[in-house]
Length: 188
Image 1 (cartoon, helix red, strand yellow):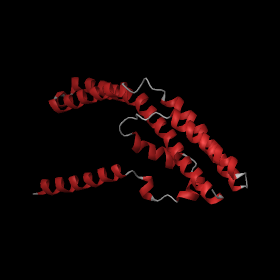
Image 2 (cartoon, rainbow, N blue to C red):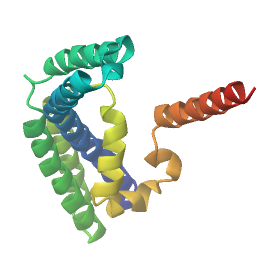
Image 3 (cartoon, one colour):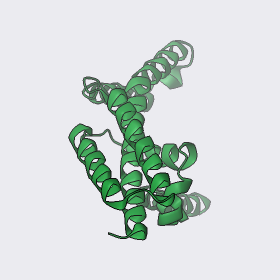
Image 4 (cartoon, rainbow, N blue to C red):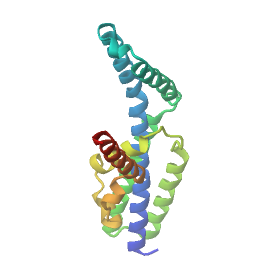
């Protein structure tokens, strides 16, 4: 493998490992914070429901019940060590960054390719494949807005399509169409 090919492989693995680390952190954030927010909002609605009868109606009650069930769903993910794995993957990401820079500086290509394979093996052995719903959307934010990825971008040349998940773009498109259709219906 030549230097350009090895740099490209390191950057691709760096993307996978860095994105994986942020995905673990995103799942950890959702799992740790969402139940607290659901409880806080439910308590607030319950208190204000004592004062305002409209908050005691069927729709708000059904919504809060749905949120409560969602909190139960989220609790199934608490047993996994997403923060610990995220930290380990971040360490691998940093090793890949350093490897990338050493190859740019003229390091031995055969030794560097061996190190890359070892890091890939560690990545596959520690990553948790089961992630929570919507963690992918949050991961895109965490990776592209919070992570230092300039060295990966040298090889991958990210565009806006890479930075916004397809499912989120489709959701926004459907939401815009629904809002327009709802607005037209209400104006009739």
